[in-house]
Image (cartoon, rainbow, N blue to C red):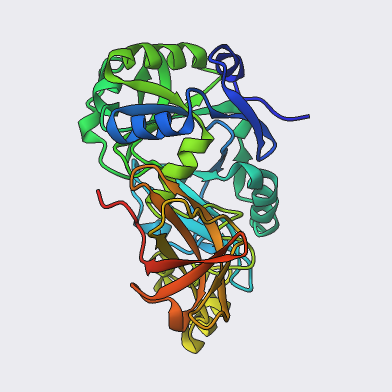
Length: 365
């Protein structure tokens, strides 16, 4: 039985196409992926991303636990700030990528991927011998993402808070559409200006917020947007997707997440394995590539070869870029070929399509 978010009935009313995503019945599109993608790039789109997981970490040992679990340095956070990070296994493989929000002293929120909620919670608790309070409140929170250049003017109509005072990777707790205690976060997965709204369903009318946001944006080109557009938007920015671009079999160093990995912060799970890999040198790297022929669309699992037909990697994400009108993708490529402007070949329907290696993002904002 698939789970449904609090907005399921709204999606049905809007004739959304629903699919199974991470165990949830989620909208993949409403008016169409191309229209929704373009709306986010030019005006705004509203996404239901309530399938994401929220864990709250409380108490004296909260920071120590997060430091032990994650590769970034959470001690740099202050209340009102968020951080992108990842959790690793002892061998350096990635458990999940996630966001850490510092709510207050000794109080944090960890936002994890939908398909990993149970796995992540079990991993955290199995590495929590001190018994720090970690509460899985995923079922209590709804999450909306308002993304696109028109999102600030739309959100201003429904809140008295100065949203200009919420810079990227910062957040405030406030009122939207007269609904209280909403975390208004300037994070996103599209590369556009936008906000993610964490709504405690025990305190707020989530459907009212959804409807009033769509109404407030009606004259500004706002469209409800599904996971299809979310995927094409994130890929244009070169943002990794867990399960495709990063998995238990990939490490942060291979996945171009070395900048997140703070070896000088103290001990964390996976540190020793990652230090050994750094010293030895990585054998492959997650890179982007572009195809010149628009009809050639790369897909996950396709083989990447060199000019001699030797296999040098594989595609992890791929699509037809709606903004650039060309095939783009990401994949793991042998280190010696993982250089910008290197010519490689993607095997598409038994034919070799020429591609150029690039360092994402594909779209410069």
